[in-house]
Length: 397
Image 1 (tube, rainbow, N blue to C red):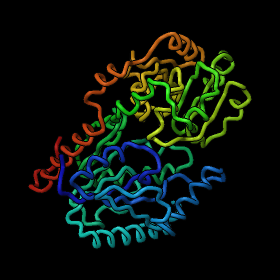
Image 2 (tube, rainbow, N blue to C red; image 1 turned 60 degrees about the vertical axis):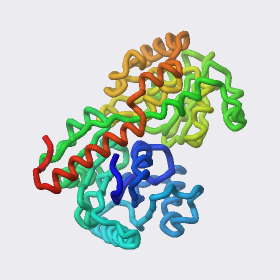
Image 3 (cartoon, rainbow, N blue to C red; image 1 turned 180 degrees about the vertical axis):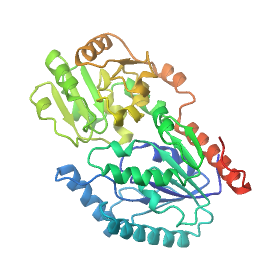
Image 4 (tube, rainbow, N blue to C red; image 1 turned 90 degrees about the vertical axis):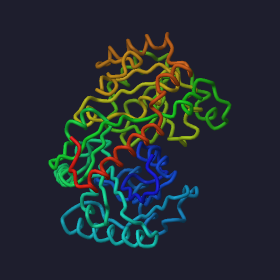
């Protein structure tokens, strides 16, 4: 495992929600120092409750960066929130670059970082590469960002191309991303699928006594067809409405923040939406689910993703039904696959009469899929790339 290094990370906000970069970097904290740089997203804000709340959170982090944190940060981690404006013209990008570089350089000086490694999950870090004294740069590609609704596609593609032309190592979470994110400079591209805390999600196999989970889901009649995570434009509401209409004896539960409307679904008495819960308690809520579903629409965006929840679903011990996303198809027959509303209903009905993995089965299936194992793999690739760059041997094939 990599030790004794200073690392700059550009990624989503630390602690806001569980995501792959935080899972992996938590293990890097054991023996390394991290400067976590929280920048703004690349999607244009809309006049929605979710976006207004999110904009307020970001503004508060600029004004009072430490007072808004609910829990103390882990040892060896420092978080900074450079002031930024939503992405727009060249002037805004220049102002953001000035603010970010100035803030990060000041922190590097205070922390006495030496020859830092720079790792980013965001294409906008292309504007900061080379300005922070990094000895190695890594692009941990977790999404096809240019396809997200509301982003300036041309701008994101430009930034990503600039990033790919300059980084020393690319690590991607799906086969599709590995194929499309090959740098022009010949840098390595490595596949690192998501990990899972099988023991954590295995707690969902036992019905919880958590009073908050019982209050939220205990009165919902079963069987419960469940989904947890962000509910957005990727969700196939045609499939969901067909399930609600075809199986009035089943309840459909969406557990997580909703950033898209679901007016048609809410007309059905067997539809229930509950807000997101803490990662630490999530398995206790999922213990009420009879099965888990991943009904994503097939698009260029979803064909490139590797949903974090796939392995988490399987580790709960619940049957799993998904639309034919490439990374879900690879997990057949453990994941049931269906492309149409009718086929999805059939798979759900078959799953209702079956079972998922046992805790022992999940532990065996994911023996080498822990986040610690994924962190170790990434650390090895970083070490190799760093040594190759140091001795001037070029890039690995």
